[in-house]
Image (cartoon, rainbow, N blue to C red; front, side, top):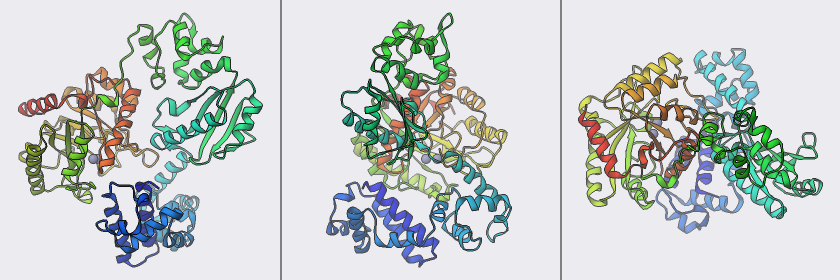
Length: 566
Ligand SMILES: [Zn+2]
Ligand SMILES: [Zn+2]
């Protein structure tokens, strides 16, 4: 099991113990273990008891539990806790904004054991009467429940991607002679995947269906399936799955049809002719041939959204999209100075060893006390360490930054003399998220107009599948960034992917640069930059318009000149 998954089991155990009101010291020991395990780079699954005990902060007890996880996938205490908790109550632990203590009250005092009952209790205004809950908490819980209900059965792209790749391999193994391709949400790089879709070329669909039904990872839904479409569930991911079975001669046509937004297919490329009518006609050998027949350049699946891509393809002016290898550094990252898992030095050397030229460190600011935000003294202490590390690690460069909270009135939360000490400032909203569009937009624009703001962090604060973002007027926010020369980040954390790809094109039209920021709280977080690149590509982002595709000298010059203008 991956380290991340092992750590998750300990987190769950701590939550369950708190839920069952167990000894606080015992709960603490699990939370401490989580902190210690997050520091471990080597795979825990390869370690023996003695080796595990040698890790800092890992005692005998935790070590033996890891050994148990490595052999059985779980450990006894966790199994007992789960057995003593109704599954619906375990599910409640995932509701944003309530901790185990509140869940305990809901379970024990309200006698509610499923999320459906909890939603009913909210609707009947019973939850607000429980001690420690008010009308506001009730409303928040209700919204969170409705949100998750809507999103059940969907997965983040980052979670669905590997499942899709595994399924593709399984099918290729089972039907080695048949052409098969992933289509749908995954191929179009959608941020949320609602279903796995594939197209399989076969001239004997009955046999193909039989072969698919033999795959252990697939569970057929007989009612939904048809002679030319296998339908059911991919059991490891829980995603609905559809595999279209088409004659080999029509394979490429169907792949194109299933990998494009309807708006893309509907756009006319000549007179009344659309790609839809073309793809429904005679069979082509490849998608490339099909676009060629339409007299246009090949359009990558991620761009097939029906915006400007057909026109651009006709004029052969499609952008050369950003690649992960274009990125030269990583801005917006956290260290142990605030809520990161690794020290500044660890974050810097890891980033350097990945081949990057620079790291922008931007820990949380003082208002974010829940995340260990930096007080003024901490800021100066960190900057001194940056100076020392920059001497040691040159030519690698650490830029001094901060993720400054945008306060309720839109101001940043340090005085100007402290703000002036940073090379760059990422301004983000983390608190009072319940705002209407006008309030949120004004709050952001005030921060954008602050001359110290270099970058706007995660513009809407959304957490995909978990929490809707606050509503903002994207157009006004992007216009303000253009007017004030503020970069917008594409927060590359798979839960965020914020700025949304649907607004990338507008930002580019306005000349606003975008930065692919991993918001890493752990050295493994740098890998998320890949998801940010995919989102950028989907919006048509090029290397030229990506701020962290600039080499270190240019970034240094940009930050310096921008500060001189204040
Ligand atoms: Zn943030
Ligand atoms: Zn952050």
